[in-house]
Length: 232
Image: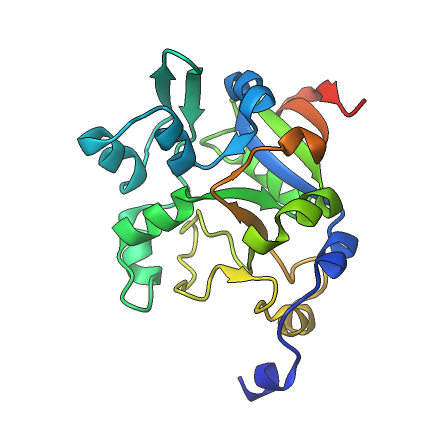
């Protein structure tokens, strides 16, 4: 830990954009039309937009979603909330620190829009047993364009915050860190440049997603990638 403290803390957006020029977000194929109209929203922001509250909201926002959940609104149509099969309460109880409970962690996760910085992690998810027969929309975002608009609301994580399987790696208050506090140099030295960041997340929503989007593809484990939208 002393060595970590000796390294500089914080990283400039330009460094992240150069190291990871593309970001990757997987969503249900039926969400693309809504995303194209209103941008990319976190689960909590979608629940706000669809005016879902009370017990229904607590069940979706503060607990583990074992399956896909469609939500409906007369104005906006249908949105499909992703399941959270890669994590569960039991794994979180082993992993969480700082007095955080599983219910707290679900709320934290649901307040962010997540991107992988490495396409390889997308492919591994597509090959997982729970998802290998599904078709997804893969959104590819230009990192520099996203950070030029949303760096102040961006956090980085050195682990997959939505997974506790196969190993519930410890996580706590410092798991989501703004660029100005993220120990990028430490993780780059400890791992390598490719794995110094695992996730990039934006709080609440990316309403101007189309201004940062490079392409959208339909992907599945055993089918050719089909581009359905690309930047003009």
